[in-house]
View 1 (cartoon, rainbow, N blue to C red):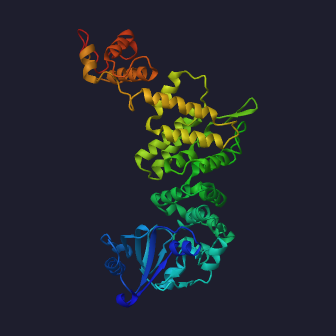
View 2 (spheres, rainbow, N blue to C red):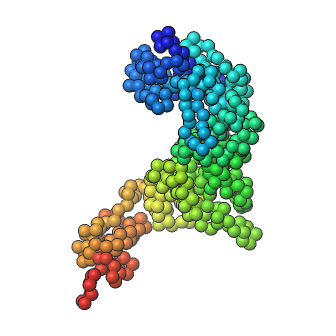
View 3 (tube, helix red, strand yellow):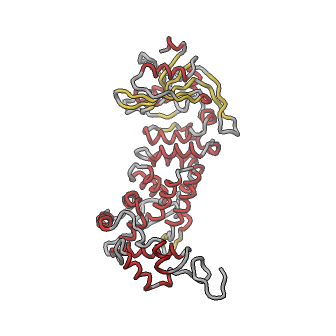
Length: 457
């Protein structure tokens, strides 16, 4: 390849690190080239690989991507031109120039990611520390930590992620530099911070990375809502303060993204609602307070709108399954089924993680609730709708368009969920509205209300 291209090429980054450690390596492969254009190198690879996709070039960054299929399955190769880059103190955008392979190595984040693999299977350890640190499970920076983090402050979050993802121990000077440079992280875009936090949550034990962030002060910068839970006492069935309990819950939650985020944030409303009454701590209204905080956090981190709404909804509802007792009547169970909607599996998963992260006796009540919810799901349609649409309501009761329609339809949906009328039973719906019009009919002067003699609308 090098002879054909007139330059040098090496595989680098996490692929080499994981290959040497016998760990399942990442599906993506980084190829660093020197003295040749990244797009030209990717095009050469495309001509020699089976069933490749077209090369996608990013000229501004000197990179190109190539997706192909190997015997092991699909793989994405990112070809990067060796470069030297630096951030100005006030900027989140680096100044980039072409560089040598050695320069590219020294500007990488951690020594374990500086190893280079050539086409003959020979590994080059430019820093002289990459191999040793990899086998020792130690996380150090190629340059002085502050210099490495000055280039790209996001690397501080990557240190916490590698601690959780790979089981590496972060070197003390690196931790000290993270604490000293934590405010520098504020110049990094919300999207990059979000992506790194989500990678931490996807690890087997997110708590390792989150504890690293808290110990270095980075948690207060990126997740102040969670930082506020540190030291907030609870008592009762809970283990540790709110922060410790939240970390236990997120470790115990299923690894899907939505459930992990909700488990992490389920108690962020407790600091604002804490009260010490009668010798015990109470947190009345913490679920709704937490939902408000979770919604704001979702917007700040630029989560997809639906995902941010779902997280806030799960936080708002997370106490409902926990409060379940077997003497609940069917109406209460049906109401929970309706309020949770498609989020019900995630809500029950958060409740289980919350319970297991506490000293509750068992999960038997939640198991019983799940069985009763399955019965409800079998009896009701997936989405409960009003038996009467707006046209039928106006025709039947003689009122015009207005907010009364939504009120009437909500009354009917509630009645279906409660089991007072059957789904789609229009006659029963009309009879229910006839029996108590005060709660839904148009108010005087409201749009849709009939106009009395002498009045104008």
